[in-house]
Image 1 (cartoon, rainbow, N blue to C red):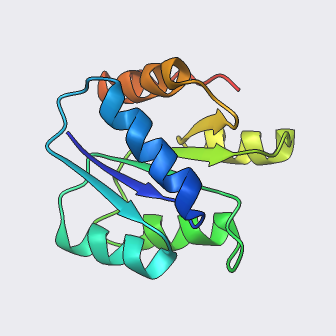
Image 2 (image 1 turned 60 degrees about the vertical axis):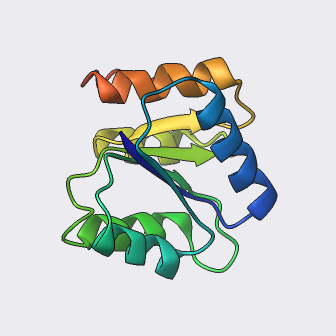
Image 3 (image 1 turned 120 degrees about the vertical axis):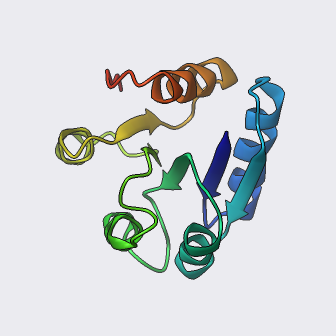
Length: 128
């Protein structure tokens, strides 16, 4: 499994990567991008099975980030979990109705593992 983490806050991004490494998945590659352009470059040059994308980007709106990543030929079919600290039902509905997962921050490593395994197994049931 190849996972891409797109998080503009380096500390939070490193924390997510650390947690993913701890949850004992059969990882081939774990990529970390700190901005949209780096994330798009990884999507164009690497095989990605799952993306975790922070919706709360500081320079560019997270929904715009998702749009760019999903419109990238190599990213249009990649299962995606949106990570957010916002408790916004409109955002949640927009994300999940688009077939994406939603993970509210703060989350435990068990919640992250459960969400990743659901995507890996093709389960499209989402919970806040």
